Amino acid sequence: MNDESWDEEADEAKLHVMERAAETAEPDYYRLLNVSRQASADDVRDAYRRLSRLFHPDRHRSAEQREWAQRQFHSVSRAYEVLTDARARAAYDQLGEKGVQTATALGLKVQSPRDLLEAFEREARRRRFEEIEQWTQSESTVTVSLDSTRLTADPLPRRLRSYRTMLGSVGLQSLFVRQAFSADLSARLRATVAGQAMSRDGRGSGNVIGTLTYTPGPHTWASASISALPPHRLTLQGSFQQSLERFYTTEVVQHSLDLSTPPSVTATAGRLLFGGTVGTLTVRTGNQYALGPLWARSPTRTSTSATATAAARPPARKVPRASSSVVLGLSGACSERGKFALEVTAGIEHSLASATYLHEVDSHFSVSGGVTAVGVGAPMPRDARFRIGDDDSVATAPNVASGLQGLGDVLLHAEMVATADSWTKLGWRVEFSLASGVQVAATLHYLGHRIQLPVLLTPLPDPTVAVLAALLPTVA
Image (cartoon, rainbow, N blue to C red; front, side, top):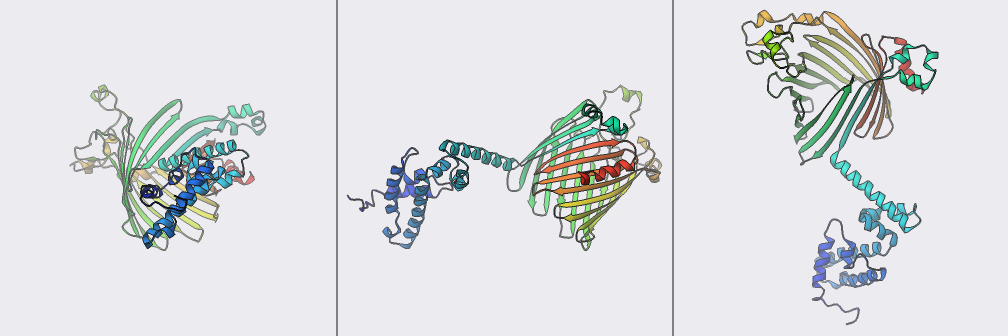
């Protein structure tokens, strides 16, 4: 039998083998040519000649067979092209077809086959890392709060004595670290595991939080979160966009799984009012209410100086108290590059009003500023909270106006955000407070990771320090 002869029956099995190999998402070029991975260039060439005759379209009569043979012929030709080129073959052995696509770029940077192999091994590790990172979708937050009041309180010549003296004057207030990993369990269900830890004044705490988020459609989602370590906290959230003009969100937080305290419920309704302006109404119940006898003895309602019998009981874990309030919000665009946000909060124990304006200088830089006024009232006895369903509800109801007795604080802030690229943002924020002084915060955002560095400059409301801190990035 000469080279031009073709035994159709003898090669029928080979046709099926080639067909199965060609249909795989990542073709095996060695299997396509029916050679081993140690095959020489001559072995690859001989196999290509034999199979190119086998799959030549002219050897098939029907149109369907010719079309199929044409696809196989191109696959065999591609396999021959890769396996007869030493550089492309080394790339294929390490990374498959993806490695072949980058073989030319890497080949310009290496001088020997060993260098080429090392380069492709590095590329393989990088691709595996990217695949794992894309699947897990990690996010992290690191916040390091510093206190430099001792440094700023000294006269300037004393501050510049030595770096050791300057560093010794800066103290650590708190440290917070959070790391979260997310993965899609299905097209509509996502799981997130987050671990967080905080240290402040020599004491630390931490927890692990698991979250399931269900997205049944483009306009609705719901999530449930629970902490693995005490204090166990259950959080339920949901959002529904009724139309392009209306949306609703809700959040329910249960601070104790034994239901000894009432849940804190937050409900928000928003709608498009006019132009690009959106109005929102938020109602927060807090966790200091009671429904008749239910939660009447909640730790969030009763006083810590209870009766002697209560004092004899083992101390219960402290549950954070949340007061009720109503929030009105208004936000939108006032110009092509300007945005505003107004918010008024009316609460039993405190109220506040805030206004914020943001201006986009260009696509890479924006500045914003705002003012917040906080009004606080005198503390009310814990047994004077509202009750629903009790006969003495009117008699024990507090004076709502007591929450607006005086001005508690006025806070001014200015912020600059620079966008370096699609993944990186840099922020600089200055806060001026009548109650807590002047604080600056530098922020770095990279992909899903954030690093924050707040620094307390002075506990006094010094406007000079605030202005110099705001101008510091422009000078630098």
